[in-house]
Image (cartoon, rainbow, N blue to C red):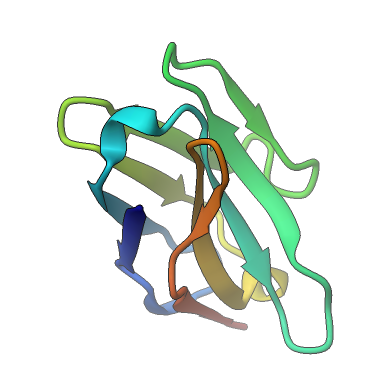
Length: 114
């Protein structure tokens, strides 16, 4: 079992920055990929960014160039640095990892005011 705990959400003005962190605990040796997803009210959960153990990253179209995902394999953490935030980035952000099955965190709210 893997437990994921997100932190760092909050309220920020448009154009600002915010950094999210996700800490994994439990059977972390099985984790391969880690990622961030988000879900705004009334919308489906949307892919934001992912990173594998070797550091290869991928980004959703709407965040490319503004968000940066990073990972510390020794600390079992994955961070999401968000810059140039827009009101449409407002959502609950979820940490995800894959280790023979999907694991999800509880989510952290990010609100961007205009």
